Image (cartoon, rainbow, N blue to C red; front, side, top):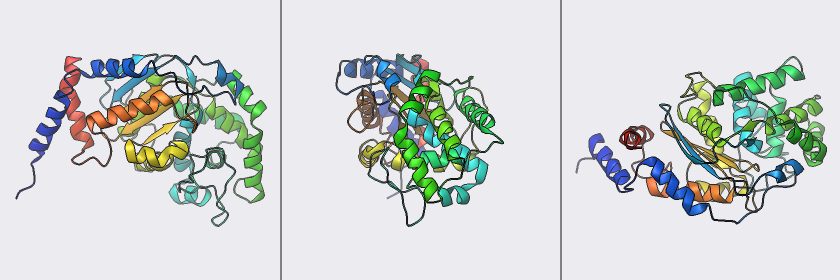
Length: 344
């Protein structure tokens, strides 16, 4: 029995999308309408400034690797990136030092613990992974610069490449992070005690608070996801945001550790490399095809957007976006979106 041809596989995928019986924007409107009324979850308030978010804000955005954007809802509403910054700063550290040096400082193993747990891998003398706070602080410590202002400038320049616009820090959130960041300082100094970070740990903690306070919107996150899906090149500006060989490492760590201590079930049920933040955002990347972002501030007990999880689950199941879906091929899915764009 011969294997199905590429054309047959594509025909199957085309039929699958046609079964949705609606252009992509209509699908997004339907999904947005279905979950907009869900009032579950709690807006983060452990950083006081985050509690100001309106729990009704809700946006969904998809950006393709050829620069098309489809979105619905509050996609221009600014909020702070929070933990979604972690894989992107990890990418900057990889570019600054190379893979092996970064691996000697920060591991890649899931912990199963909360994102702010004070747990370290004393056997390897490093944090478990760059998606928990300990690993993210150690990652920030690796960002190069002759002084603190240069390090902040490089951080913002990196985010500018991903988003395609100038980036700014919400100073109110930054000061709130500084005033309440005692646990993160404890983690940083514990790592200093074990020699996991350098002597400039206080400066690196400030840098970490700054990266979490960068202002983005749902549209920005979709472009960031699409940039990773596009091998590190921003599909809108054409500018390279990260060297292509490192993209697979960011996607890998997002897939295994990106959704706090829900990461295992997310990988099982949704199967899209993703990262969430307590500001209410989730960004995902379908390699070769598109980036997906959802913004909705109410969070579940593990710190993930309630509506965000529902949207990703729905889209993953409806369109077979799980990375291990039988017959899945990112480029074919990208080709498949072309007729949908025309109808949208």
